[in-house]
Image (cartoon, rainbow, N blue to C red; front, side, top):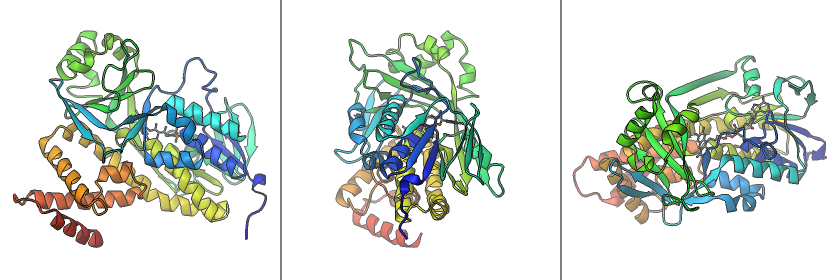
Amino acid sequence: MKKLFLMKDKISIVGAGLVGSLLAVILKQKGFNVQVFEKRKDPRKSEVAEGRSINLALSRRGILPLKMAGVYDTIEPYLIPMKGRMMHDEAGELTFQPYGKEGQFINSVSRAQLNELLIENAEKAGVEVHFDHKCTDVDFESSVLHFQNGKSVQSDLIVGTDGAFSAIRKKLQFTDRFNFSQHYIEHGYKELCIEPVDGKFQMEENYLHIWPRGNFMLIALPNNDGTFTCTLFFPFEGSPSFAELNTKDEVNAFFDKYFKDAKDLIPDLADEFFTNPTSSLVTTKCEPWHKNNTILLGDAAHAIVPFYGQGMNSGFEDVRLFVEMAEEKNWMWDQILPVYSSTRKKDADAISELALHNFIEMRDHVGDPDFLRRKKLEAQIQEQYPKEWIPLYSMVTFSDLPYSEALRLGKIQKKVMDEFLNQNEEINFSEVIARFNTLKKVD
Ligand SMILES: Cc1cc2nc3c(=O)[nH]c(=O)nc-3n(C[C@H](O)[C@H](O)[C@H](O)COP(=O)(O)OP(=O)(O)OC[C@H]3O[C@@H](n4cnc5c(N)ncnc54)[C@H](O)[C@@H]3O)c2cc1C
């Protein structure tokens, strides 16, 4: 039976971050009565942004839902395309590695700017966004949210998009048979800024710059004000580590040794190093993502480390898949929530695994001759067999194949490459494809 009077369904979204704001736009367009509750003040009115000053890589999985919401046109002008990785070795020599085929790129965007644009779009669509509303409790039986300011709100559907340390998820942890795990990696991160000179970028802007150094790395993404946001991913303990850098001299000596060309572009590097916070990186997993009429999406359901640039993209993809499934099931929340929660989980687990693995690739392998040879070979195979062989990075970044399938195929590709590279003979690409196709059916 077709559900009538969608507008009567009251939907409350907790968290006006990236995922919550986008979901609000789409559900409002579908005709629902949508309210968003955000613990922060309105970022458009605060003088100091409360969110982190990070920029993010936006790619296909994130772009599709933005287009579905009809808001991509308002965001596109703020994007800076990045065609590939620009690797900096210790001598300052540069090597370029494209992300995909000619014409394929990812996009650098300021998280704060994107968030403000999405909130703006939500309000334009007619969504009520309530700032200064910190959710403190939820009653899953009556679908009632409670806020720090004493307010309580009853809804037909509650969506927790309140990020990696979700209050809704914390409450789920007290329910029966709810599983939760969190894991901090041994590395933290610190942001630094390369300012423009005469209003111009100090490095080529259409690349993600990367200084891979074995157990640690520095990366830099361009911003549309001419700056680069640099992020140092570095162990908290050990040698070298954050624990060893306690004075300006130690910081300067460390950067002189490992990142000389970057250091030369940041005159007040040591001051910035001690002013900016050192933050940690966590992976969280939980299941089920729902209880009665409440569901988690985005980081609240699955926070991942940032090394595949897929945290936000996967959260936006959650929105698209959730809405598509809801529409297909005629907005019957009791039928949608359990199915969505169980079908999407394997993909969240897959991107979580891929993100952790990509850290090793970025910091350790991207400058390695064997790795570069594999990449080159893969590109050649793809050129000859574009439909049969799509490199793992492209499956994750430039397609909307389920993450779990990309992970499965990527593992088979690695196995096939290992076999052929060990043969010491000239590699016959048609044999590579034949072997890949055989294993694809079996594994
Ligand atoms: C260093 C770094 C680099 C990254 N790079 C990338 C990248 O390149 N590409 C990419 O796709 N992803 C990247 N990510 C991940 C990305 O930032 C997150 O996946 C994304 O922000 C998740 O969006 P979200 O809306 O689920 O959560 P958030 O953006 O965290 O939003 C949650 C919102 O909920 C609000 N909130 C929290 N608690 C409450 C409460 N109790 N009541 C009401 N409101 C509440 C918060 O204030 C916030 O506004 C990166 C992350 C980090 C840390």
